[in-house]
Length: 288
Image (cartoon, rainbow, N blue to C red):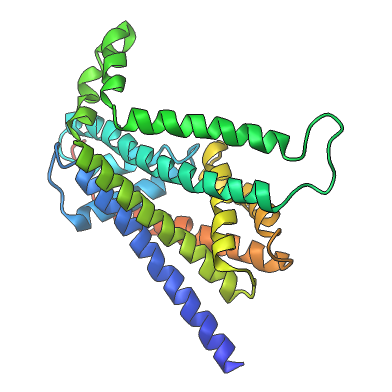
């Protein structure tokens, strides 16, 4: 019993430590992204990222995180440009999520055929349609990511956007090496928060082969990335999606739900609380 409790405490400590690594990698990404605008130290970048989490928790697909991060930059002009820079970082994370998600979806389609066939469509017909569509989207997103000047060209050609082009010009200042570096950091971050979830599942007694769990969890992350949600209200949807896909590997439904709630709290709510505390120290209304 003591060994089991010790293992549980150790697993929880590793997951909490993983939270700091997870957001530390995101902080490093943001530090690199705003470097053309302003040098900021890693601790300040980390504080900005956590503050962004606290801003994002009540916004669709966490778009509010941009507002929280830019509070740590000096000039208003830099703050507006930093929003475009932050979107490049989100772009890199989306590419990684889609690539891993496609791998997981391919495994799901081939490993878990439907018990009942539809009279009009073959088994997994819609999943295969989605798979093909996502491959096209992924190819387009990668092309756009390495050809960010296309976005700037769109801003220059559309009259309504032309005045705002000065704020998106930063996106063409990143070299191919910079973009590849961001993708690498995004991939490492993805592996970290995936490992956190798998460790929690194991700690809570959910038995499965780790690589199968990783692939099915990749499908969960893909679904959550594609469905518009508010972070504070996404727990219910995340629980249902996790229970469906991870439930194909284990019948321990309570363990899956508990792990989903725990990882949501550790990776989102806890950083949001820390970010809120940090926001109190930067005196948002100082100039007013």
